[in-house]
Length: 337
Ligand SMILES: Cc1ncc(COP(=O)(O)O)c(C=O)c1O
Image 1 (tube, rainbow, N blue to C red):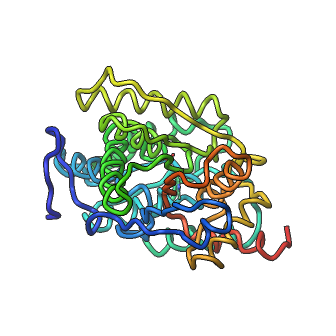
Image 2 (cartoon, rainbow, N blue to C red):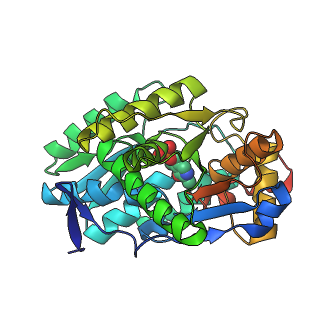
């Protein structure tokens, strides 16, 4: 069994090797005009290639194992990082993973159909069940769970993006880690934390975590999926529910979401995100992806250029993973779209 601990009465597995590293991005920072830019390496560690879902799974898997489930289900798209991380983690526990998949991006290239996360999902042996285009994800997944139950399985349904209160608590932990690491490194608190925002659990956990610690650190989410308004609502709801569960329901917090990097929508590349990916690779030797972290970095560059972030502020960029997506989007980098 994986070592578990109980935090605030909620069981938790340790699915990461320890605290994820905080590293300076001095060369990229100098290039874009930030003298205190850091990256939090949440792309490192965990099964299935790692990424931001691993922290979310720490309490979710503790619950599903404690409750005796043998199968885990999630709704996702064919190039989903969440599905990959889920299947990798499920393999570690001997659980079966079933993913209800739908085309949410409409990219028809060969690489998108077979490389990147798609390849890794096939290596992981993930069972993919296609959701008809006209069918609602929520309804479909409920029916799927019923069918699996009828066949003798005990399924656990994870929400889209693994964003519920238990998952969000993983990023409350991350906020604590960031505060300790930045204080050791600089003697100050971080001013701004940057994150790509999809289903919202990652940003919500950070917001809740900083609110609990009573610091002024702002979490800026660059939405890559929802409209700005929907993202603010989703993040706010999760942050509130999570604080409530942790016994801090009346703590004030602010939700900041910027849609400047969204472009034509989820999974659609933008020239700025491709440029941000190249810059980060060439100046720092680190890989971002075109769907999430590349857009968040493009957003950070844009905010810095527009004077929304001061050059001496301490900025922490959360690397949420997603490297396999580079191989699914190979055509975007060849300019052959
Ligand atoms: C690499 C990466 N970054 C960010 C996100 C978004 O995180 P959240 O859904 O918690 O907003 C995801 C979600 O799939 C992701 O795969």
